[in-house]
Image (cartoon, rainbow, N blue to C red):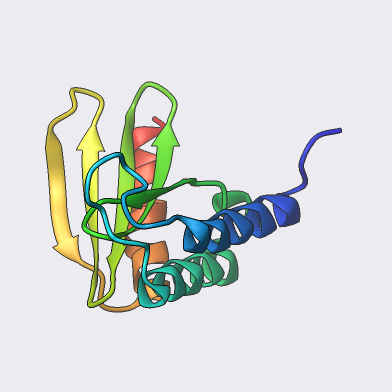
Length: 128
């Protein structure tokens, strides 16, 4: 059975929650556990994406970062990616082109603005 758009948003939120169960050293080195603040920022971003763009955009790859934090990665098949990176203290995004070069790297100040001005814009360009 195919996932509905609503399921995609719930899946992303559940995957973010699961990151809270990672123990220190989860990366085979000395990475700390993923802080609740980073997970909260990532969940808030997913909710803003759903609110601004709809659940069909709520399908990023979800993963931990060793900084420690959460990364959400939206991929445009063969065209590039948008990464949103959340730590205890801040949020930023990186746009990576199909050539693996960084096109843009800036802080995220407001999640609704990120959804409309960054995610929608770059994914539409990357998907062309």
